[in-house]
Image (cartoon, one colour):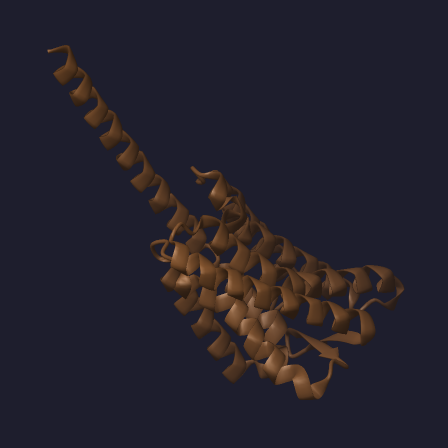
Length: 234
């Protein structure tokens, strides 16, 4: 996260709290993975908080390396899988599910590629102008194509979904990426994850409204059933 260790820890705790509250809003098991996204973002910010603390202190190199790879595993490997899977798991429309399956498979290959890069190449984080910059030896020729595919797998499922207001989440994710790429290009991984973490709070709103609709539908169903029972009895 930007700014400082304190900001990372504070943001992580707040976002994690929203994540826990979001999980409590689910009314269908199919929503559980989607509901966990804010909590995972919160944990990711806390992990980067430890990275902030250890970067100026070489004696904590083991914690620094753990924090670096834990953060990047979430950013580069978990998100390309978790986001399309979470949307697919909730989707009921068959045509949309087919598209989401394709995006999930693309996400799987994206995650495998980044896993290979994290295993095979060096990553050296450093603090630059109040941001964490992740310097890596990943193949330069594949950097932009891989990132474009990454964006497709992490953002487009939100537009494919038929779930109400997921499109808004997709728009916010895209705009935050665009702003980060323009103004914080060198710190894209860290800064965009910060913006995405804040935006993930929208998931609480999506699931809250979904639960309200579910309760109204359930009450309407009960009302119809009572009317039918009265009609039969008469």
